[in-house]
Image (cartoon, rainbow, N blue to C red; front, side, top):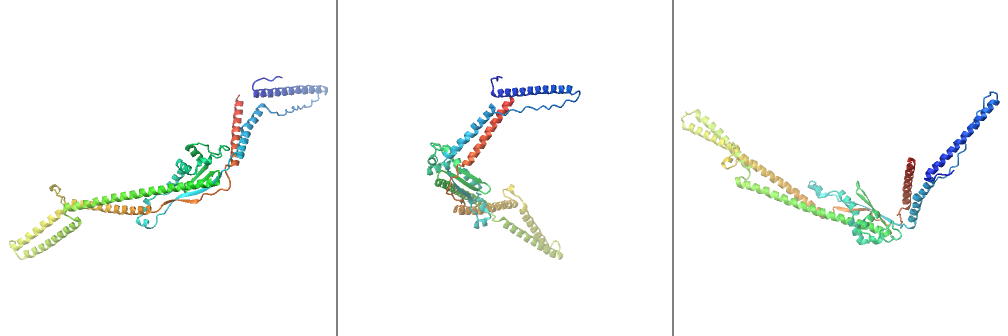
Length: 432
């Protein structure tokens, strides 16, 4: 039977349908023969039951490869096997060995002890923690400024472009710009930072062991330079702020004292509290004199008449003392602001306000002076430093590129890609 022209997969389906139809026809013919034989046996057996005929299905055809099966196999070879062969060949024959140098360091801050703790904890306002410096250093290692500075000294482009003709994948392209060098820097310098402990670990790759260690050491030296600059800037800022605070406190103290002197000059009172105590002493003395005058009046009045000059004089003395006491008491609460002079209560309130301002200015001055002393003491030493806990190592074995890992990951992704394409093909085919 001639096959229909067109889609190969459709032709395969037509073949399968024809085979199935032929098999069904054969089964129907066998069933007819079995039925006829049964009827003949029944007639010859004079009413005996016909034996049961078991129909045996024909054997299935041997499985054969269809065009779609060959297509899937060829796609597996083209998508998975051939790229893996190319990748494996490149990794073995062309990939240049790379050496890894490991280094570790952290930014530490010197603890403030000794005399600084005796100044009321003011040293805590002078310096900060080292977490911010570690974060800044982590970003600086991956910055363009560091790459450009190290390239000028070590000629990174000359070293990493040496094997570009034979190994263009793991080498740097000649004539690359600083942006391209920065992108390649992310591949050869791997930085890990633990924010909880502040530890920074470097993994530097190079085509030669000495170059790997030298590059790691240069990164540490540049990091130390950055920390020193941060130290100098922080010390200068702290010292400048402390001096400015001291100047402000001195000006405030001077203004408070001048205001107090102006008050004393204007009121002719050096200390209103002392003056008040003196006035209270005068009032107490007048009250004592009034009590004595009353006693003298009682003694004179007992043996004399009302017209006696001694009685009149005693009464006059008592009256004068009482008027004096009233006038003295009036000065404590009187307010003569309408007459152009302040009352004693207002003067006392103004004096107390000026005294409080002066005491506050004195406390501020003492605190600013202590802060300046601490800032000067810290400026004389290095409060932050770079602590290297793992010095750059000199590698003896080329651990990079990691050929087995690269080959395995490539095979896994290629296989997944092929499987997805195959599933998509069969999904589209089933919909048709």
